Amino acid sequence: MSRLRIGSRGSQLALWQANHVAAQLQARGHEVEIEIIKTTGDRATSLAFAQVGTKGMFTKEIEEALAEGRVDLAVHSLKDLPTELLDSFALAAITRRECPNDVLLSPRYASLAGLPAGARVGTGSLRRQAQLKALRADLRVEPLRGNVDTRIRKLEKGDYDAIVLAAAGLRRLGHAAMICETISTELMCPAAGQGALAIEVRAADKATRVSLEFLDDAHSRAATACERALLEALGGGCQVPIGAFAEFQEGCLRLQAVVARPDGSTVLRESQSGDHPHRLGVAVAEALLRRGADQILREVYGPIADSQ
Image (tube, rainbow, N blue to C red; front, side, top):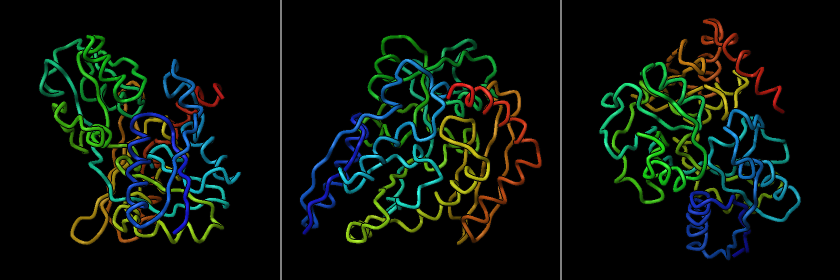
């Protein structure tokens, strides 16, 4: 069997993900090593995600290593991966999806509805911020950066009354017991691809692509392709207030999506069902644009574009 080099960020969660893939490859007889690569997003720890303003801020340097042949595959959180891939890259596998929901953590309160007026809620995501403010305008939504353990420490230190994180990362790192509430996707629409891992390779490297085929989950690929088609049609990235979640219901895909002003004053929601992932994603995006999503996104992209 071949020797495969995996490119990964160095956070605890990223390394869990890389080791998870490595273990499955080793079980099939491959020799595997992991190379840690620091990304733009890892370096800009003092800025909110929206201020970083760079598509691929958690993937660019890893893709460079892949292109140069320093690694053979890259393991990403799919939600961090830009929708537009260079022709020289391909997604060899989308793994079976972990829980896609956002969740609430709090040492004192059991639910979002149970938080008192003025409670400090931490999040680094404009998407979560917008939906939180729309649900509870009386809360103080404050910026939160850092890896999962850093965010939990800030919560335990008393910097926040509650924080909102992705369920998938907490489960993967063994922190599921800390979850107070799993927030329904109808109340807080997740990021496109949240909970799924993407394994990226050089498009011309057919041998590695074949080696990874067993990790590809057809349902997860179809659902996330639908979400990413919507995101691409809206011109969005991981730092803008767009939510998208697709799931199979009675044999077809149902996509629900959100575009919101960061202050929560406007939240556009749309849902449709269909059989073709890409067409469904584009159709829902077009419906949102007809309802005014283009104006909201122009307002958001302006500050982001100015920061680049």
